[in-house]
Length: 333
Image (cartoon, rainbow, N blue to C red):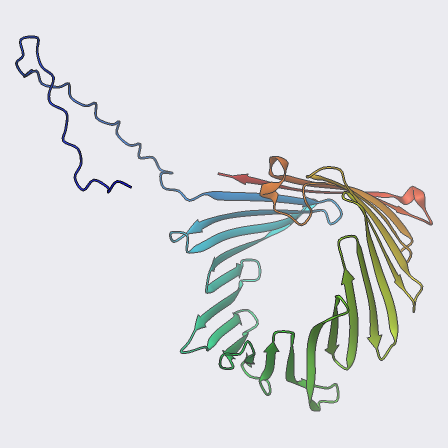
């Protein structure tokens, strides 16, 4: 393999005239580049405008956002107003990686949040609501080289003992002080634990003397999720079946109330999805079509627009059917 050249090749000799003498004609000057345009919007960061409408709630929502401070933070302006009129509720927010401030101009209040890494493995987070005059401070630290952590959090101003939380890879357990209706204070234990059992995941959630045990088995075509709540002994299960790559059926049943629900989904294309279902608790049947992924980003939808059209048909009164329309549109400037 040849070694790379350390010096660039010498320039070619100047052109020769017919009589063999070097030409002394000066080369034509290079055309200077056009002057740059300096307009008012030069250097403006990209602006995103998103508008939403929900016919069921008769609510409009508009959001304008852009990056500021050389991309270190996002500035967002959001306003909600009803279709029948009324005073809008504007909201202004400045959000960065370690700090955020959300100002509600209607209530003249703000919610401030911030995080910081202290010495070693200590992590500090704080939040404050200026209108209510309350906040919360939490300190988290790792236990050596293990993935376990301990967090201490307290209200500001304090209203009792701080809450202690032990976090580990399979869940967390917290102990906090709880005030009863009689005014007595007791220690309350809450927690959640997950574990892999028989090719599935078992989850145990304990909160306020109630425990919910849920098991979830899932493969490429089938999902089975039984659930038990103690001490009420409320038992339910959910069943989901992938019929074809584009068709899916799900069913849920509650043994204590005999309520059940069923949903059928069909993905007609990448951006179009049909759904139909029935719920026995409300005795309501419904069908809907989505243009654009319901849980995806508007940027990835056709024309940056997501539309949902749904019809609800009560079983007891078919003539009282309603049509629900939702649309979300995004513009980038």
